[in-house]
Image 1: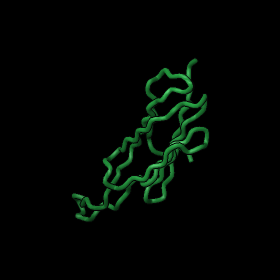
Image 2: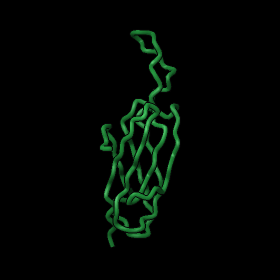
Image 3: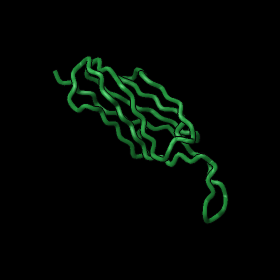
Image 4: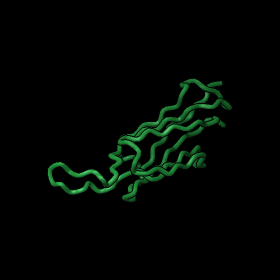
Length: 112
């Protein structure tokens, strides 16, 4: 599914070769509600709404899967190390506890 939420994948360093280990950073705009906060106007609890699963893939093959909980801060940031096997595409798929699924991709272009 196309990314409905604003999100970003960054690869560091910007210049790398096949076989190098890079840092893949992923951030997504998400409320990450715990279900324990009260709405100031109504006094009712704000329903829990948080990312519970994140999968990093390279050309469709998962290389890292994470489970997360409601206690992670708003707009969560995930970071993994990745050994670049070739030119391809990194995709991050994530779901939240309400069943919403999103995906973000970035091309991997090694130099040399």
